[in-house]
Length: 164
Image (cartoon, rainbow, N blue to C red; front, side):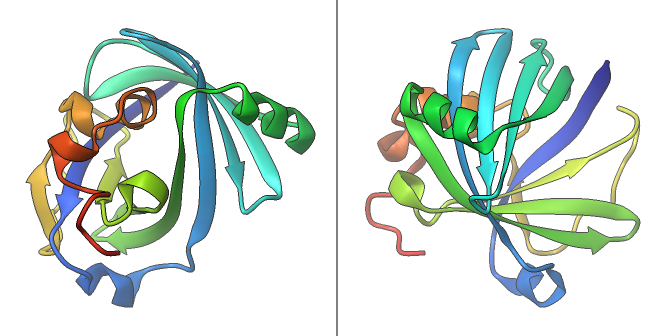
């Protein structure tokens, strides 16, 4: 059993791009969604597919199980998804010993950019890059599960009038 421990932030500007890896496009959708658990399918670069199960209510740490699955199965699951299929490009930036994943959303959430840092321990205190905005760890509006199962464009202010 793997534990996912992460913090999440909005991104203020594009300074992170000068340190970023090449991005990978993601298409992801939720097959099942409850308050304390979810089943997600993700297609990466149209070539690799993952099925992920997350369990737990803690905003900082949850149990996570992830498995590679056949691409054709993932594409079939996406067609049967609950709600909205999330489209985004993920970049990675290493900053002072921690890897930050920056998700630049497309589709209905075009313009939203969120950074997550995964930690080994809940007590870890990664140095925060200057391009980060407010922390949104635990704010359900910025969880991919909520973005997919609810239309939050008006509530978060992205995807309506913000260009990428």
